[in-house]
Every structure is written in structure tokens, then in C-alpha cells.
Length: 327
Image 1: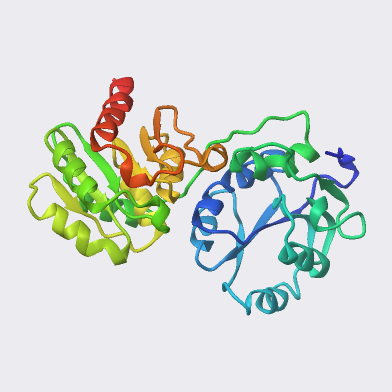
Image 2: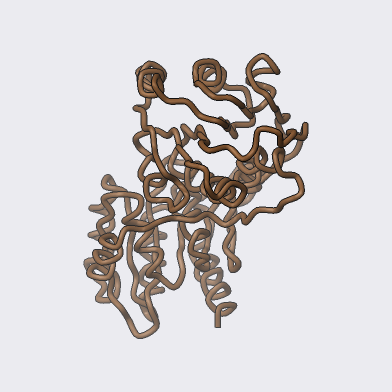
């Protein structure tokens, strides 16, 4: 990476582009914090998709959010909303080729731009970094622009989420306290490759609820499954999470988390909750999106096997391990 001469610093206004999914936004929050550590007086604007903008809006380091829809209206909407805005420093942490990154870098008004060389050379960016030549955790990838500008500094890697007081209040009202506290279990995942199977979740929740109360997190599409699983247990309760920060409140109030490879794992990292993560057999994906909690158990099936082949007993043992470490 090329070192940036600090002649333009400190910037009064900084913009960061993050048009990724919920998990991507959560794992970019260390960059938000790092910006304020480097330039405490700078006003930070985050450019985000509407779907994930809530995370930036409630982050303590973020001063403003420009949100855009997903799809063909994304770039025209962004160009219109940025038309009268200008920044001292623009950061695009995306580290691979992206036509969106190239276009935004060309029309955004900024005195200095930092981005990946794959998305433009000196005609586009004032300072560039190369795509990584080995697997890096997503947090470390997002922090690379700040390490380019401040190579002498190190930055905290743990995500940081701002959870509204109302979300915490609602979480407290939904969760069963239990003598030993609550375990949050997320039964939903976006892709079929991350589905463990309802019968496994039912077995796990039945076993865990023998000692702990259980808060069952699910997508709206899976809520009826959560209701059915909990209907026969006095210690398990499905929870309603209308936003990602509602889910974060549940995790914040839990002693530990069990989840497939989803944003819930990254939320557990933010609160440093012990976590059992169920991951597909892709070690590159694990290197990029693995949990950052101090106490963790990562379970993967055999190569080429389905996630559903992870034995139920192995998950129980993983939870026992991370809980024992917490004692």
C-alpha cells in the first residue's frame, strides 16, 4: 500500500461508502470508530443502502447517513442526494473490482479520495491500496484505508453497535429471565447452504432449555417455525425483531448465541458474547466472516457436505465449551 502524505489532514468532513448487506455494514463499524479516533473533530457521513442504513444511523461515530435503494435506482438516487454535498476526504474500503465504486468515485465531490487500485488509478483516487493477496477478515479489509493513512496506528477490530433504548426495553419484555440466563438461538439463514434443519433446531432448543431460557430469533418467513418449536417448551420463547437492532438487543441481553453464518454472529462479536457458529465447509469464507468473540466454537461439516450433517450433539458440546470458558 502507498503511504498517504498527511498534508491535507485533519479533514473536517469524511464520507465512507458501504453499499453492502447487513453483515457487511456491521463489520465496517470498526472503520467508523477508527475515523473518529484519527480525526475527532471530523463530521462523518456514511453512504449506505436503505436496508442497512439503520446500523450507521445509530452508530456513535456517525454524524450523517445518505441512504439509497438497492437496484437500478441506486446510482441516480445517490448522485441526486450528493449533488450539493462535498467532503474533504472520501473513503471507499471495497477492495475488489466494482463498477459502482468507480462511478461513485468519479462523481462524488471530495478534495481527497482513497480507494482500491482495482477501481481506479491516480486519475480517480489520490491514494490507493491493492486488493488483498491472501484471505483477510472483513474487518481488517475495511480498516485498510485507515492503515494506509495512519500506518503507525492500530485499530480495534470488534464491531460496535448502537442499540436504541426502546429496542432494549422491548427485548427485556420478550425474554424469559431464567435462573441461569438466556441463550439466543437464531434458526434462520439467507441461503439454503446455511440451513441446519428444523429438526436439529428443535432438538437443540429442547436440550438447551433444560438449563437456560431460550430466545428464538427468526426471520419473518420462519416465524411460524419458531412458534411451533417453542409451543411445547416453557423455557423457550420466540422473539419479535422488526429491525436488525431489535435483534442486537436480544443478543445484548443474552449470555451466549448459537447461529448459522449470518449477521447474528457478527452482532455476537460486537457484544463479545460467547458464540457457536455453524459454517458451510468453505475455509475462505470462514477466514473472512468468522466470529470475533473471545469465546467461540466454529462448527463445519465435512468438505462438500451439507450444513445439516453437523450433528446435534456437536452443537450442544460447542455451547457447553464456550459457556464453561465463561465461568
